[in-house]
Length: 429
Ligand SMILES: Cc1ncc(COP(=O)(O)O)c(C=O)c1O
Image (cartoon, rainbow, N blue to C red; front, side, top):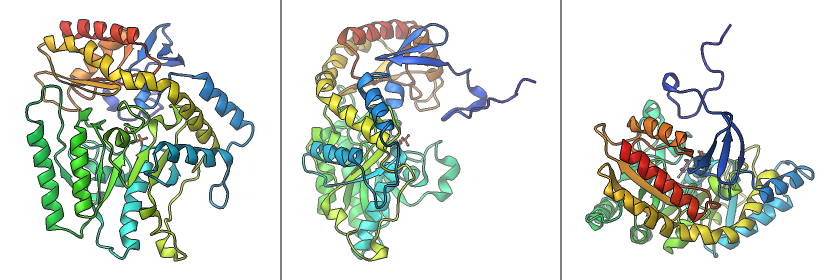
């Protein structure tokens, strides 16, 4: 008897609305091969994780070699070379901003760890009242309860609102090319935050932000100057700064990390997605000695009681190390891609349905004007997905926000072809 319901419960999917999933047979570089003999360009790096292209032999080889040596081991009381080497490599890459690495498994847990670390930092210093955070409207930090609390309230969190802890969401000064109001928006956001900090000087543990680009909230971009001013404000009122670089890390903004591009020094950053080049689920939360030393104690109450079974998994570490080894070669593309996007996307401005064109490093985004309201549930996303797929391109618009975030193996010629096809699709809508 045919089953009425699909056996696999798909993530982020309105079940009754869902079309039959497309089966992927294999991947190579920019391309995914599908079961109907077609090939598509992966223009979203498979949920923003893939950096160097699919099935990259260097990373695949590193995992295979490691798997034959040590696949996993308990990480409390024990350590291993891949984790030691990865910690050294990542701290090195942070130019001395961070001195300590905490391992977990995915972006949400990296954020969860950061929020708990920041809260307990104040507790360990004798300020147990600092349990709240300042975050931003439009933020997405993941789907676990702490990460959802930090995220903007939305349909994603609606059902669980009663469980979410107290977080104040300030305006995110989202901007785009030729935005005349950006300074006003930045000033308004900073003034909201100043007011919160002045009114409640001992309430907040920290400020958490997706630096330069809010991902799932609609590829909303802010200027580096805003992050500089935000850091100054945080220092003035002595609250911690957490950068959620789960999406922006590993070259996405045109620099290895957004904090390096901006020149700021957050107290904690969260990394995942591109960490292993898209091969293994793994995350890191990095912090500085100021935070770490408040935990360095023989007091069980000052201990960070957090960990996961797969913490520091050697295969994940091997993948991350191999991916980092490829970063020098990838740098040329990820640092140049901003210019490629800028020149190739400019003709889209001719189309009346395109607004708010914006670019940050390897990420380009556009809002599509429709009669429906802007946002994640805008139905144009379905039409766009289908149209792009039929033209050999994998995209997953965030409602009426169309964006491209390709892996770094894409060539300028391929990106040019993407924009030619995009222009044609959007002209017909
Ligand atoms: C900025 C940011 N933080 C956290 C997350 C959550 O990561 P994960 O899906 O790996 O739990 C995401 C995922 O999209 C993200 O974009």
